[in-house]
Image (cartoon, rainbow, N blue to C red; front, side, top):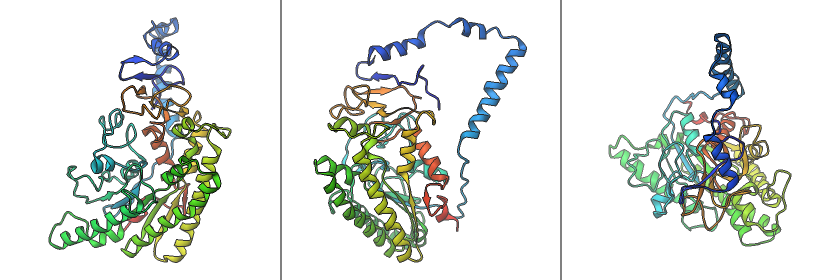
Length: 413
């Protein structure tokens, strides 16, 4: 998906005033209205030979070369219907916050794919949506959505915006999400035994995939309290133990297939970059201390997965290095066709970060880049559908999974 902008810098539109945000951006926008140049005019009077050459290059050769640069698609090998249960935060919330608390997630969230707000904090699909689609499966419905009409035959999504592992017993911490699952499972099996053929049975629960994507908010919340780096790091083992407890609880309930994401480069989020006063930046403009803490958390999580593979003998536990995928995208954004990797598409304030905590995406006064602009960050915290599509292709490649495992491993039969 190529940018519609005439240059690499995205155009921002103030949706409240319906006006171009700044003079420099306004100049870029006006380029679209300029009359055709002599070169453009000449292209309209091509000879038959030149026309055929032009047609071959742009309509046959260029698309072919583009395909060669894309990852090889992963073909679904599922022999039984895939069932997925997801536990996480806003990176994988498909509408739980809206359904559970009635908290508004306004348009332009959802504009790129759904063409309406669905409760996802992105312009379109999230990574979990794209992973589900790779299995030819329906998108996961939020567990808390009582009006969505879902029968949860393909699983349920317990993720909610803002969730963390600690403190426990606070909606919607990881252990609360696991408790919700336990209730969901008991009730589903009860109804299935009573003759409801549409609900998940005990065998499907055993064969299901259990995904966990949690930890980002734990690290971010600790930094937000202005604690020292040493105290931030000191908290990490407690977060790891909560994830361990969640996996073991699901294991005792018969779960055997686990897919665990590490956390992304927290220090590259426009929100963090705009709020932190004393910036210790790395060569790519990201906060070194935030990313260092994320790496330490990820290393602890990797070790946990290694230990649990030995302890839980008949379980498959896949660790996925989301950090490396996202950091590579930010560090090499131009190579991958993206621009302004540290600037939010939807926010307020313009460059360098286009983030204002008082005017966030969807709130009065927000500015949003043109549809088709290939930016990494959607709202300063979450990723655009274009970025999520890139990330999903890397996840599906198996190159970032330990052990190297295809995403459909749990439904092979």
